[in-house]
Length: 176
Image (cartoon, rainbow, N blue to C red; front, top):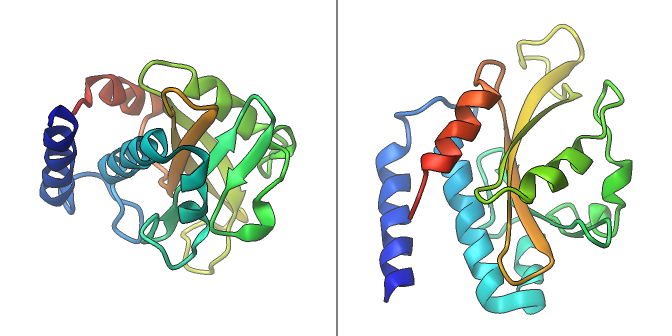
């Protein structure tokens, strides 16, 4: 019952927060990312390895706006679920941004924190209207470890202004 109340509270929070908080170009807020990641963690906590396939569907509920849930097994150094199937099995330790920063390793470190956290990195710009003339965009991703499993779930948004310090402080205050 406690979990059901928590999930209902999360759903209410998501509906109440859409359009109110800082958004990326597609309308996804950092609060929605945190909420979806925590819901995905709850799903995996309840379904274990058998639940991984749900995150591989590019048309499924774990893909929205211009983002998606990804699942890492940091201990084995592999991506275990991703809507872009060609990424499944990739080595986390080989994921780098346009500046040569091994951001996925820091995502794994951030997942070890009690409330998870946010990491910033830069991805190639894939659209002419991205507002960037540098060829890349700032992406921030939130990651959270799934209790009782080897998995960590995350999702990211493109945002040029949100402060990592503020986001990570908000994550600690975010509860359900």
